[in-house]
Length: 114
Image (cartoon, rainbow, N blue to C red; front, side):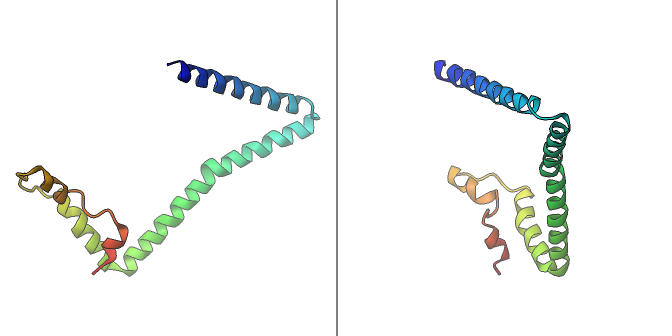
């Protein structure tokens, strides 16, 4: 449609204008400052896109493993509730019963209730 084309053209022109502004900024700095600025941006992107997600995944993985080690009852409860849905079950006759079979409760707090 025309609105979509207009939006895409506007976004492309805006991005091009931003790039030109950044390139002019880099061109008007001294060589050493421009290099430092580019290295700072590279380091920031490396941290935000690689290091922080990897560290967060490692920390959360270790914390969840420790929680499952310390509280084995939780692991059994979760396996029981989630593995029930994967067992073959007879097909329900009315359509409204299909929601009762799968998936299990999506409320995380319900998994911890006795």
